[in-house]
Image 1 (tube, rainbow, N blue to C red):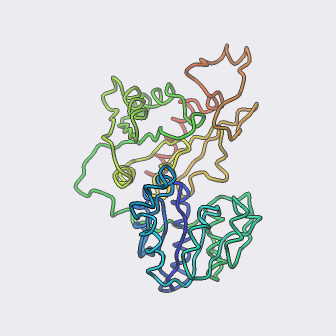
Image 2 (image 1 turned 60 degrees about the vertical axis):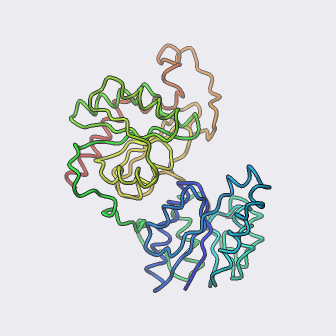
Image 3 (image 1 turned 180 degrees about the vertical axis):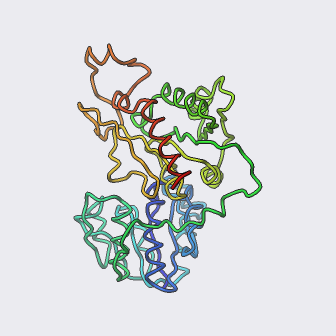
Length: 355
């Protein structure tokens, strides 16, 4: 059976789809998937054994210059790739109008979430069959349920399996000192754990005999990493890495501390013990999913989780007395101070050493 999967972005969403592929691989002998995914994440599907072909799409880039996209033939080539293979089924796992629109170019039955389950209800109009999947569950479990209905099997009991071969990313010749990885970069300003806290946590980890490694993906993240590491002999600012390079570093780490970021989901997929820090967002729906994953939520009583990209909280006089408003912002993260995070991380690493 050959299935075309539409799940274009984001990084976390792409990673959340992998356990559903593993379920399908075990339930339907011989099944293969071709996966339409944003070009920036095209590496990830190749890591799963049931993915036969990756078809990159560049919706984000194409939107910026539609005329150039049509003129240079990229759009025509993409449509031709969809038509080159005969599929038994198309699964739109995104549930958006942009993903449903891509299904128009494939001559095969199209399935997806029904109007009560999809993020954009109008997307369900594009499908031949639309399935109900209850809201309020983790994204991984919702995708597992969609695939099970579409392909006719029961969702396996227990935690989903990402199906990745972690050993392929490990460098057998490496004798690096034990280290923890700080995934400090994220998109929303409100999801950033205060830089002051990262610095204090780095000092604590180094004091316990571990190195701290800091990846980065853009100039702002690099500058933050350099400030966190400044003057600390065992704090290492890594060179700029592509997605596979970050995955290799993750696979070798003793553990990881992450904010709400796609790379935190990659750590979970690689079974790296990870402590994820949440301020304005809700880990119950999109938190890191897997073994050895611990979520700490900054449940500030006044507002968290607010799900806002801009913090609108007005600090009280008591807040101003207790906290450094400039360096401990947003205040929801004051519930997750370095002392608490270091204690939780220590317990997580100890559990790894003595399972």
